[in-house]
Image 1 (cartoon, rainbow, N blue to C red):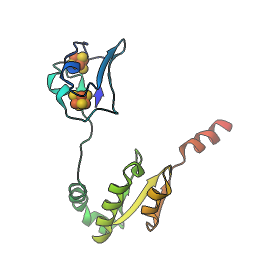
Image 2: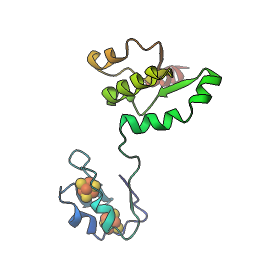
Image 3: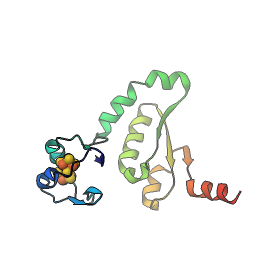
Length: 147
Ligand code: SF4
Ligand code: SF4
């Protein structure tokens, strides 16, 4: 959930609507405690200033795969496929692995782009994937700074 400081008039309606007590108000505006927010959307319903917005949505493996399948002919002609990228796909390693399995069963290439910051149990779900991009951004920034 995103909050616009500019649009928010600090009316407090969202705080009252949140049964999880996930929203608080301070000098900077409202704060959403993502550790306890359950994404129910009740705060959005009462905000008349359009100051709250939800970005992204929950999708099943099947729903994502249905979107991928629409590009199957493009993948076939270009030799391309699906890359799971960031954020960090290893934060949802179980989901990503299930999606890749579905793609491979359908003959669609898969590639993992990751910073590699994950437990071995999560990384091991992808050891059989032939294509990896390792994005080591902090190292790149460090080299840039030294030059
Ligand atoms: S309901 Fe909307 S305008 Fe009111 S405090 Fe919450 S975010 Fe701000
Ligand atoms: S989405 Fe639901 S749980 Fe999360 S802050 Fe809004 S009202 Fe509270």
